[in-house]
Length: 542
Image (tube, rainbow, N blue to C red; front, side, top):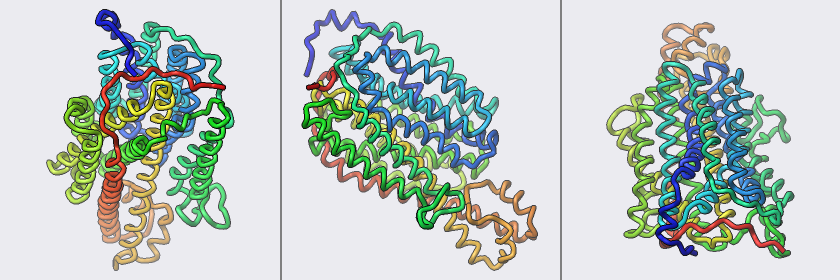
């Protein structure tokens, strides 16, 4: 798998191309991490609930997940350097749309456009590293790419928190406009790469894969809005009274199976498939994919839940949110960089089990110690422990996927990684929103029913069919427009406060359950194989 290189060859490889590649990763990660920090500002600007902001995150993630396999083939057909440079321009245009967006629809459209650009950008990063670096430099570049993702999260929470508090949320995305211009300029330092016209694009596979992933993501994202079982008034249509959201998920899963069957037939016929299924041939590779999906979904759930509670429930500023999340983000950053030092002493199986055990313990701990103050030492300790496990796992699993496949499948590994991570981010964010709102609604309805102070006449004056996370000030303003007495308002405040905290605690316990279950596939991870990252190459066509 290694390529023979002389020391002189390695010395002459400039790190300037790696700066462009790493900043490409920063663009994507900074964009996604900035959305939760900007939640309260967007809620106020667009006058929408926080779950609508979460839809923007999902729009980005499902666009990447749905079309990253196509993006990998475009990189092979036209050359990764040209594709990289082109999609950076598109990404910059999307960020301009974010800055000038005047309603939530424009914001979501901008995130969708950014997602389409990222679908081609994600697989280009690994291809560019393989094309520009060899030997020890290549291994260093892979580590830097993983650290860039974590560093962008830290920067987004810090810069986004400061700007969101003292200036506004729009300048946060203005930074990405300027950064896109810088990356475009640096991209001309990348080594030119010839495209491979012989690589064919499986259009049927593109339609099947994109439809399956988008339906699954969209279905999960609308479980709360359209209903988990029976259709709510917010559903665009119903299926014999049932919500269309679960039906979308089921149809998406069926289409995913159809895609896999179609891909097998393409490979059997000697044609170029959209995704070479040999990257999932062994149990070890499948275990790595399952584990990667779980840990990214857990990260997305926590990154949505904590800012939701701090900004919307507690009414804190974006800066206070960034301070509360800083221990977690810094820990992810450093653990992602330092975990590579343990590869020589411990196997991926050992690191994976310990990583998911840390995530499980941290989430259980947070469920018991969390209160209305996120700055307490026990809560910070829980976030740090979770960050150690999460940061180590993401870097580890990426390396496992890269080293487990031969060099001719590197492009397919990149697209599989991108699909898994972004589908997990979309599903994790959507499930977190639906889960927390469902738990909150059940708790509020129970509290109202058991309260001797809240009469039926008062509950008829408020909409309990669409309970969502709101601050006590906003709830008080709503109740002032009803016939509620001061005692009834205070009782409603108590129910709201207790229900929000209870929903978060139960949600954290359920997340801990997911982390615990994932210890099983982590036990099937392979031993670490040191070596050079394989060069991406097109699949062999007939």
